[in-house]
View 1: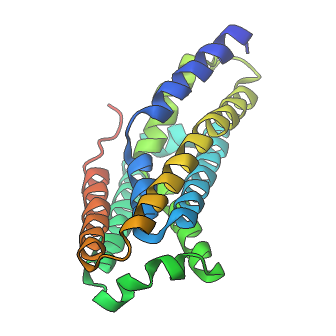
View 2 (view 1 turned 135 degrees about the vertical axis):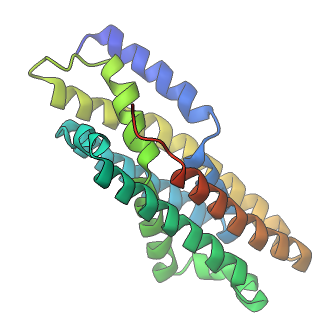
Length: 212
């Protein structure tokens, strides 16, 4: 892969990473809801999911999934249902549970749960599959024998650029959450904001259209 293509990819990735999107919204919501550490771990989970998508794309499986109406619909609706489930769980949580969110977030079990949720939400996001199919081929020659390696390399570059930005966003959101955690009204507002954000993401995922 030419160095010029890699440089252009780096710049494009930086612009995309700074732009608001579903992953950034998810990470921000986690940070606001459960604290800075949870925001950081959610970013780690999301980008672990990106690495999984990178491997899938390098193996040529992303195109197969996108071309199969059944496979694409399964991933789309499973991801949408999971996000809506997270949202509803947050909305119906009893008030006392919200008080201890930040304390729960720093426990080892709580962090593992946040990490796995980040991985699952990204892996089951059909928009990420379409992103890989639309964005990466602009910088890779599909006919080249090194195309799988180039795609994998670009995936690593994407994570290397985007993860620090998302991690900072998660930590910053968590610092805001810490300042507001003493107010019962703000805790209640945070619970509804978190639940609503997940449900909105779920609905958006459900309406994702396969490539024409």
